[in-house]
Each structure stands twice: as structure tokens, then as C-alpha cells.
Length: 120
Image (cartoon, rainbow, N blue to C red; front, top):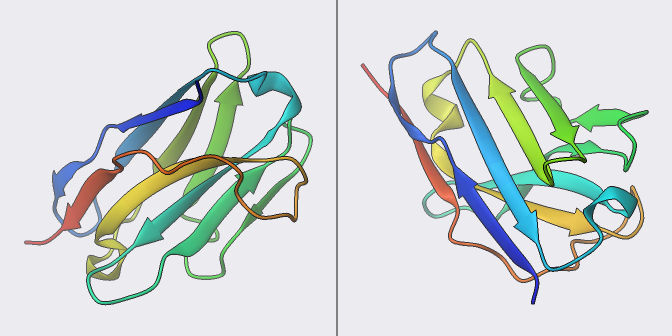
């Protein structure tokens, strides 16, 4: 069965960095695009970044462009999100998901997510 397990969140001061990981299993990871999403309290879940199946292409939300970097390791079935210059507005639960198409919708059940809190 498909499983996505996010980790790496925590409490960080503004300007700090975190690296999130998402371990995937139960599907052929290397043929799917992967994305990170986030959901802040009282807001809808939003797409943060997407990486193509072989890491050729990436795309970011305007709000994180230049600060976040998505990457993946197909040998380890893991996708990462390096977050630098964090701002309080980055506070949210972060989720990963798989996509059959780069611009398509997520196809897997959501995992538990990992909480990121940016606060002094």
C-alpha cells in the first residue's frame, strides 16, 4: 500500500533553516513527480514545490521561490525540501504527495505531515 511519511519539522527562529524529508513506499517512486504542500491553520492546503520524476524540472510557489529547494533521491525513494530564510508565514503542516503528471493533482492518500513553526 502507498505510504508517505514526512519528517524533519520543528520550531525554528525567523531566518533559520530546516530540511524536510518524505519517505515513500508502495509505488514505483521513480516514475512519479513529487510535490510538497503545506496547510496553515484556517487556510486551504497549498502547493509549495514540485520536482519531476528524474529531477529534470522543478517549480515553486512564488512565496517560497529563492528560499526553498526541492530534491529527490530515487534510490532511496525519498523527496526533500530544504527551507532557508524561514519566515513566520511559512508556519504550517507540510505534506508530500505523488503526481502522475507534473502539473496534475496529487494521487496518494495524505500522510500525517510534519509541523513547521517559525517563531522567535
